[in-house]
Length: 343
Image (cartoon, rainbow, N blue to C red; front, side, top):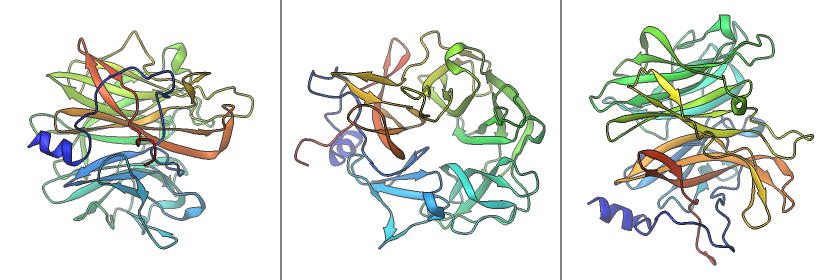
């Protein structure tokens, strides 16, 4: 059944291999501004959720694919589909970031980051829908979680362990210029309905290495063959005019369990920016999500649009998808999926 599904999706021949001299290792699959992409497999299709569309065109924009290769923004004519068209009362319009969706027994829960009217900080929220397309709604009068004393809270990620227990991972926004504090990735237990947390937060990782600089964020927990891996992004996400390339990159840590403790991998980062005559240009890869199709794992991430000379093209972040491979118990990112020439 798994092989049939892979073949139906056109993925049965996706394997690990080195790129050829004429083949760039990473090619975007969606060349729209689609930051912080999170991919959910739903039946025979894939749904992607992203940070709010520019111009307040959607609080939570979405794209859809049936084969992981061909993606289209979900829209009705010129109007983008919005998975959460009505924001909770505590949210200020315009700063709805990093949405992720998890399926529960009752339906689907959207975890998101948004600006809290009361504190004027980015905080976490949760909304529910019977349909993964939404509309996701919440009658909450306050954020699900907000660490107001250490900068606010962003980048929530829900993880279901093998025993069915749910956990919520997130990052304090200590790099907020008003606070200038360290950033940590935390975890708390998440209720079975995905709408509340319990217990005390546990700090798992901190920005304490040179490549991470002032910030770690975008946690993604994965269980593989009984071992736990925390993927995350680090360093400044942007691509400023004085920078040859964005310093944003992806790394991981090994963890003893879903609540840690966790240890940074010595070979971090596992994906970073580059400008190479043969390999091409990749600037600011980060904010990954990880999902499986059959027995194969995939990683999605965004990177900045670039010119042929590897300079920032515009203010867009494109979506990439690549196989997530495992060698000697360690994760590796394979060359990205791409359409065949002429498609």
